[in-house]
Image (cartoon, rainbow, N blue to C red; front, side):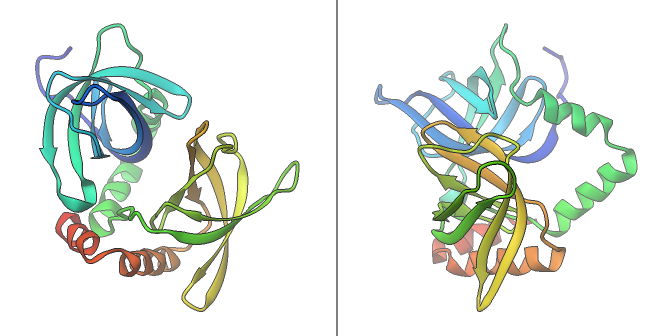
Length: 231
């Protein structure tokens, strides 16, 4: 471990967190990594009662690691509980690839990315959003379903049989009266749970409009939480 504060990379990764809750019951849930480092992360959306010192597992894509909870805060209705976690000795950090990509990004690109995040925060909202999923390669699949949480950049769909990471898709959804077809890709695939989907072909304008529409669909408490946490 380093003696001083370790540099962290701001991200918005969908992860799975599992372990034992304070009442001794096993849990397994979706959460979000808001920033990451080689030794830890800040996770939001935790629905379990946890305390400093608890041990949890965190999975990103197909990699898992065990972490110790360092701090716990109530982050409001939208983000629920946030926790800071530290990687246990001998464990492999699940998001090594994301850290490597951040390190390899040109300085100008990093500045642009940071500026974009300051200007526009795409908070996920837990709203049922109807959509249609079509595969673009291999065996044709046409699935009418709904996302369990949604933002202007992507969504999460709960399904017992998620598609593999990297699967190329077309997502068909409605934005008001407008029917939109957007290229997308599976970023996370959790067997028996669901899959995280990134929209790869939306213009900035449509992303903003979709985010606004999702926020309008969310409950008043969600909207208030989003306004409070937006930068």
